[in-house]
Length: 387
Image (cartoon, rainbow, N blue to C red; front, side, top):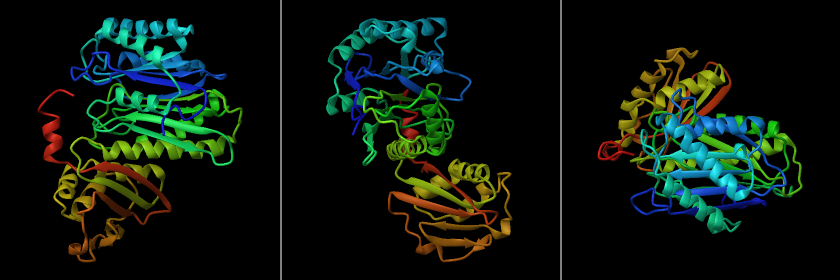
């Protein structure tokens, strides 16, 4: 259940002393090939961390041999010195592996505005490269090494039954979970044999309906990176559409894990918008509801306040008639045709998982946006210390 599940990949996570806690904070993922095809999707925030701008350039030729990741520092807003630190990190791992530095991706996560302790980081890269293996526990340790305020590592592995290839993955993220990615680092691996262009299309389609539909607190990070590496070691060249479906399952699995570990959350909320005129309308409505602090507080208090749902829907330019909108909370249609329907006392919000269904009655398109409630624990976690 990790990035080492597909053939051809090695990984490791080590404690390099970047984190004061002494927890693992440096990871490497190495693609032994024979293929080094890769694709990446990055934050759309105009303020981008040095590792993001470096890795964006690395993936332009569709080839990545290795990834080095660190937690404990974002290396964002650090100027030319931060850019030099990223380049040095890539060159260091490249030298150990005897590959071009331009084939080494770099990912960082942590506090914005501070430079990384380079001696500790590079020492950690040495240790991680020396201990990297295909063992499942190494994949799990790598996932632990990229955690920040996460409470558990996030990993997945999806096998293509009867087709002979596997997709593995690891992710981190517990706050600033908003569209155009989140404060997430994700590395996906596969031993399928696909061209970089095919990986790019599959990844963009998968991210669009998974990570880009995750909106915990409406805040967008500077470091978001999702990478897909293919080793081709299985020798299997799958149908690209079949592969894309499997990749989407892996991404949705990881996105769900990120949602359930969101900072301070007590509820995982699925906002299902149905019968919309277009996908854009469905996503826009779902996102507006996900970002309603009034609604998020109501869910935290286990109050099925459907009026707050309608109020959020009404802020959008989506096509709908307010007098035809229906809303269900955990399967109870508390609103029909824009007015009260079934008794809201029949709604139980005690379970952790909450589903809000919004029927726009304007078409036949649907989309789901994932969010969380807003709790005092979230406020505390983001006010008591820097994350």
